[in-house]
Figure 1 (tube, helix red, strand yellow):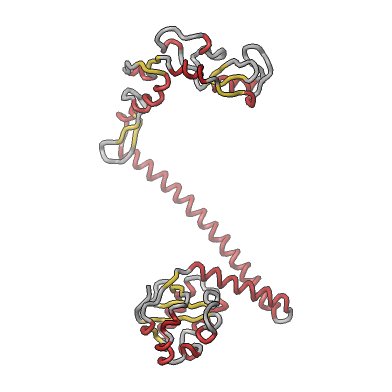
Figure 2 (tube, helix red, strand yellow):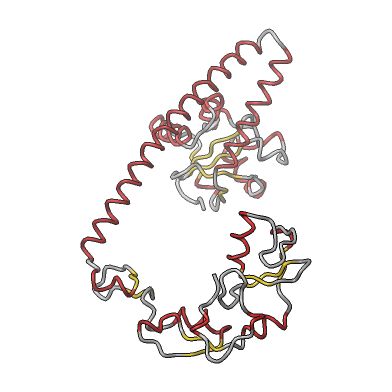
Length: 315
């Protein structure tokens, strides 16, 4: 709908009047063929009922509409109009192209947002300010948030059920693949690749780590320490098919010859700096997985990788 004519100072050229609403053009559009101009809202609503020009009945569609010429937009922008909030006390008369900016700042605007001065943090439209009750609004907000929280909990519960079911099906599939791999070389190859891919995906979820003191390595961890590390690996999502092998490889009896003795470890410290290490979450320990360390020589690497536990020196 266009602007009410009574809001304007002086006469308004009839070319600036919308033929549909008889108001001054608001966001004007022009028919492509006959070039008649209309308010955007007016012509859009008109064409939703009948695809013809309201003035000469020529066939038009919304695709035929275009912006009005610049000269028409300039004439509109120079018109002087009273503020929308004149009924609330605003006496300002301004150019039409400045109206939108003014309305956002007009102190007489009944919907102008005001921050609550009582400390609840709400922003309230001016005309609702006198009826604002902090306690009531906060209770309403809490109630709404509790409802949303309840809905989220239900949704999370449903998602967890789905995830657990998918995990169960995946484990059954893995068990089937392992049973088949004994007798079928093709299945064995596919299963081996799936397991390698699973290790790579898990490795990528772990943060990189840097060992600053290779001399702090614990070469013969006791059972309690091994159990603690194994639990951390399991909680991090370590694929079950490698977790026992990794824990065997945390003891020097299973280390390759490049790590096999204290003297060797002291001589090879600079080589160890080339390891790609993954942090075992929350522990002074790292994983050196073969999938991350194809660049390392065979005498310092074993499958599926090494668990290195330290007294200190992990970043």
